[in-house]
Amino acid sequence: MNDAAVGMTTAGWVFLGVAWGGVLSFAMFCLSRVIAKRNSPPPDDAGEGGEDG
Amino acid sequence: MITTMETRQHWATRFGLILAMAGNAVGLANFLRFPVQAASNGGGAFMIPYFIALLVLGIPLMLVEWGLGRFGGARGHGTTPGMFELIWRSRAAKYFGLLGIALPLLVVVYYSYVESWTLAYAYFSATGAFADKPPSFFQSFFEEKVAAPGYWPIYMFFVVTVLINLAVMSKGISGGVEKLGRVAMPMLFLFAVVLVVRILTLGSPDPQHPERSVWDGMAFLWNPDLSRLGDMRIWLAAAGQIFFTLSLGFGVIACYASYLRKNDDIVLSGLSTASLNEFAEVVLGGSLAIPLAFAFLGAAAVSTIAQAGPFSLAFVTMPMSFQQLPMGQLLATMWYLLLFFAGITSSVALTQAAVAFIEDEYGWPRRRAVAAVWAVVFACANLVIFGKGVMGEIDFWAGTVGIVVFALIEVIIFVWVFGPDRAWAEINQGADVRLPRIAYYVLKYVTPVYLGVIVIAWVVQDGKAAALMTGVAAEEVPWRWAARGVMFAIVAGLVYLIRRSRHLREDEAGGKLRSDE
Image 1 (tube, helix red, strand yellow):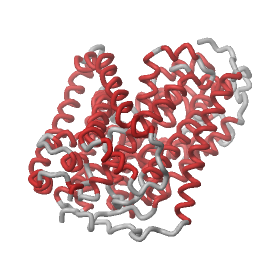
Image 2 (cartoon, one colour; image 1 turned 180 degrees about the vertical axis):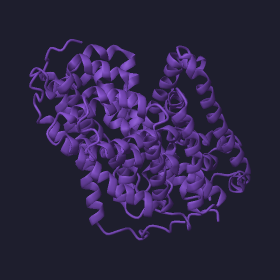
Image 3 (cartoon, helix red, strand yellow; image 1 turned 90 degrees about the vertical axis):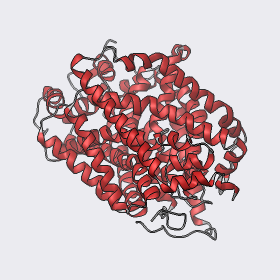
Image 4 (cartoon, each protein chain N blue to C red; image 1 turned 120 degrees about the horizontal axis):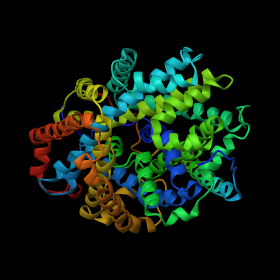
């Protein structure tokens, strides 16, 4: 491969945008659901961590 | 005392669990292996097979391990010998399961050594030891002092790394492993985000080469070569990357999941773990090493470095590049601390299976079990440190072929032997997010077939050459045989321990599926 500058092509930006957008959306979806569950009443069998032997 | 559901340790919080699981997944592969794999396999086009592999291989396999783990843990077994025996009524079950202890134990033998390099480089960066060194220094320093034996400061960092792992693990699941995740993972993400912002705003930092830009490095990674999609190898490479990045097939996810309660959610927690891992890999990992290297070395050199492997990129190219930046010492320290946090959260996970086995099946107290396991790791690691080619030999058999084979075994046992309906019900029990029904069919048919194709392809491509040590330097051959001896000894030792375990023999004699009770 030679050293000539190539630069991001339109396709490159599309792939970057879709990949980053997909990953960030996935992460935000999961985070929002985890926070929502954290703020909802705990189930009856919730408790603190068990003993460490 | 043998652990039962009542005496078993548990995760204290869901966030702590997710961060610990993410710590297991996020490792050196996210920041070093992924960018090299993507750049070498079609650039942006690599993301097509990558995301397909994530959906039909990575996430289903991850949920299988979570399900297997919670199921086994609810019945007093935190490792796959016991878990398999609960499901598969065969004397062979627990021996297939021993791979879920042997494989991570073998991998951590060399992984902990590489982890100690990151700690050493963080120290050297922070103290300014690299500050006034010429660019040529880094190559010779790495090859002659770090990767070669005999340089005692590096050995001392390895000892310190082992002691840190010991200290963390001795405090248990919530007091040690979870706390490590809650501290190390946020710091890892913080450092990575700072570095990404710094690097992507560099432009063309070398005035002598204004044509070299970080965005040319991003182009190297992201401009797609769609013609490569017809090449089976990039599909295999993508599947392999998903394997390594999610730490599948080690049995570690199952071990960590065994510390859940039987109605704790695994779907949302598992998906959250995967999302954190993908953020670390695709967004952060893809925006660090390659773009920075490109900005200072240009396309031709980076292609050569990428082919030389991840260590060259991490321990030669990166410090050379940081040295030329304003506040480079701070940036380099952050980079190596980031790698160290990624490493230690993974090494703790890799040894947890062996510790859990001794605790669960022999009733040893935690501190004694941790000390015994790390004594074995430390002893075996000296073969890696002083030998030649040992790391490559273990990495191939345990860290590459072994994990794919074991993942296939896990899927067959949990989905086909246990039954797809039971497996589906187990995964969805307590779920905070509903999985789409199509996932059931992916789990039942697509994932096992995809895995089988990978196993066959790798055996055909690399198996014979690896078995016969074709192309291996003559001086490495005896060391690689010694590595095979160590692998055999660890497996044999585990066979012996499994045969002796009264807890496992009781479950075998019980002779029926525990979920029927």
